[in-house]
Amino acid sequence: MMELLASLENSGFGTWLRESPSIWAYPAVLTLHTFGLGVLVGGNAVLDLRLLGYAPGIPLASLEKLFPMMWAGFWVNAISGVALFVADATTKGTTWVFITKLGIIVVGVLVLFAIRREVYGQNAEAAVATSTSRVLAVASLTLWFLAIVTGRYMAYV
Amino acid sequence: MTETLDTFAFWLRGTQISEAIRVLPWLWPVCEILHFFGLSLLVGVAGFFDLRLLGFMRRVPLSAAWSLMPWAKAGFALSAITGLTFFVGAPDQYVNNLAFYGKLIFLLIAALNAAYFEVAYRKTVERKEADLQAPNAFRIIAAVSLVSWFFVIYWGRMLPFIGNAF
Image (cartoon, rainbow over all chains, first blue to last red; front, side):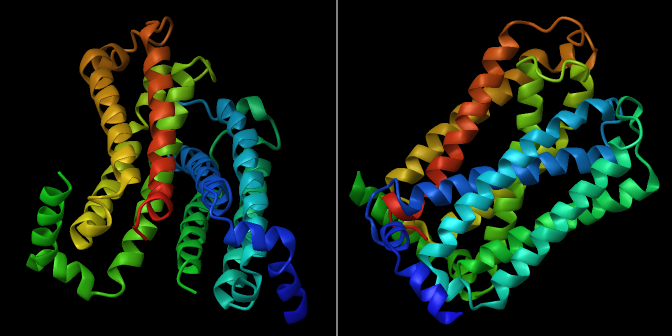
């Protein structure tokens, strides 16, 4: 395992990303990771707040359009996240903080699937907030907050 | 100019409140977490409203989208307070930092743009007068908002790389 992490970190890409003084190397990837975070967590926040009863005038059916945006944010962060990991694999790959962060994100994504199924699964045009969807909304907000907590923590390991 | 800024930073760093921020080891990381969470709320909710202003999701009444905006303002407040904490705690990291001024300029543009919308159009939106036919200016205001928040994040991210902040 350690050898694999070391070979990732010492790969041409890992070394370039970590050591290049270019503003287009590590800083650019980290910036993408921040934009993706804003889109993914922000999109979730809009949907979750609506499910919890705020801005009831927004038709839930129209918020289905947020999903492609949230997935775009997710994939930008998955890809930029892999790159950031590779650049620092022996440190990030051996800390419980990273494992915890990944676990939180997996559950967050599963909750997002569950919200889609619960709210838009039957009849997307007549989507309503059910009590299950409200529980999922609270879980979603909590999980993405915890993803930020563990993500910020990563900078200190 | 640099000398004046250094003198100011030196003075601010010596104040009790600045020292208090640096003495608590957990305060800085906690503020970072809240700064990022505030950022997400702000760009998520304001971005959603901007997209609606640009003509996306037309089935959402403008007045209904507007009613979510207090959450964007709460996100902004969270990021502003924690951001101010960073500045007061370690002003020497920012006063000579090019990225910091880049961020401030775009923050100012974003704030003036939002204030203009609030003053000029708040009543129009709240009276649902814009739900059917929105003024053309809304598209420009939305575009300025999206672009300026984009650059606020960009320059914020550049703080440790172009300048010397962490």
